[in-house]
Image 1 (cartoon, rainbow, N blue to C red):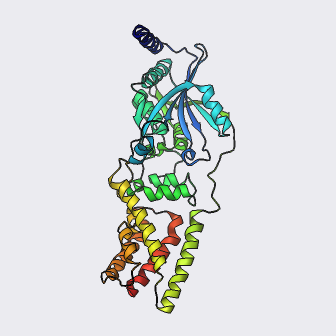
Image 2: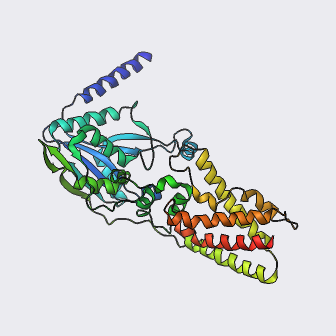
Image 3: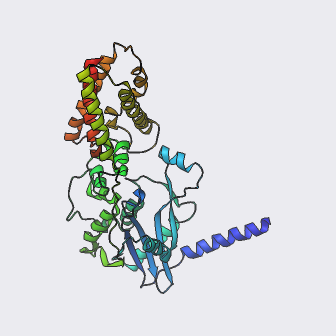
Length: 388
C-alpha cells in the first residue's frame, strides 16, 4: 500500500512538472474575464478571473481566485475573526461559464495584447500559483481579492510596459463611496457593511485601488496602454461578450432598513411626546433602545479590537451604538434612578452631535438608512437628560 502511495506521489509530481514545461502556441490567448453581479450579497460586486486558451493544445482553463470552502475547519469562526482563507481554483472554462449561464449573469472577455513570451509568463505564473502549496491566500475584500490579483499579476509580469489609465473615471472617491455605488443604500446588506466597517474605508482611493471592484478592472484595463518598442498600443486586443444577460440588481426588501427604522422612530418619538406631556417615562422603550444599541456597540468593539479585518478598526459607529448602554439599560428598569444618569445621557447627546460633523467632513460616512434611528436617539437622549 505504501509503495502505491509513493508511486502516485511521483506520478503526480511528474505530471505537474510536465505541465509546467508546456509551451503555449502562437494561437494562445490570455483574457481578463469579468462577470456581472448576482442576487446574493457576496455576488453584488461581480467577479474577475483569468482565462488561458490555446486551441492547438486543446487548452481552455479559468484561473479563479475567488474559491473558498464553507466546510473547511473553523470556517465561520475564522471568517468572523478576519482570517479569510481563499484559494486559486484552476479548472475548465466551460464549467465556469456554465455556472454563470445558469445564474443568468453576463460575462465579458478582454483578450490581452501580449507577445507569445508574455503569454507564456502568464501561464507559468498561474500554473505555479495553482499548485496546492501556493494556491491559498488570505483574502481581503478591499486590498487582496479576485480583482486586485489580476491587477497585481499583470503589473508583476509586464512591469513598466503597462500603463493603467484613469480615463472616464470619477476621481477622489473613497473605498466606501465606490462600494456604495454597487449596493443600493436601502438594503440590509448595505446597512450591515457600513455598520461593521470603520473610517479606513473612507480614505480616498488611488484609481488603481478602484480595481478591488471587477467593474473597474474591466474599465481600467479597457482604457490602458501597453508600450511595445516604446510605442503605446492598447492593452486590450479584443473584447467579446460571452454571456449577454441583463445586469441583475440587489433587491430592496419590503421590510427594508429605512422603513423599519422609520416605524421605530415614529413610535419612539410619539411615546417621547406622551412622556413629556404626562411627565412620565416609558421604561420599556428606554430598555429596548439602550439594549439594542449596546448590543450593536459590543459587535463594533469586537470587530475593532478582536479581529484581523483590515477595515473594522476606528469605527465611529460607536458614537450611536455605544457598548456601555448594554449595562445602563438594566438600570433604566428600576424605579429609583442613579444621579449620574443625567450626565450619562448628556454625554450620549454630545456623541450624537459628533456624527453629522464626521459625516460632513467625510471622516466616516454612516448608513443612510439609520437616519430615522439617529433622530430618535437624539430626541430621546435629550428628553432623558432633562428627566433623570
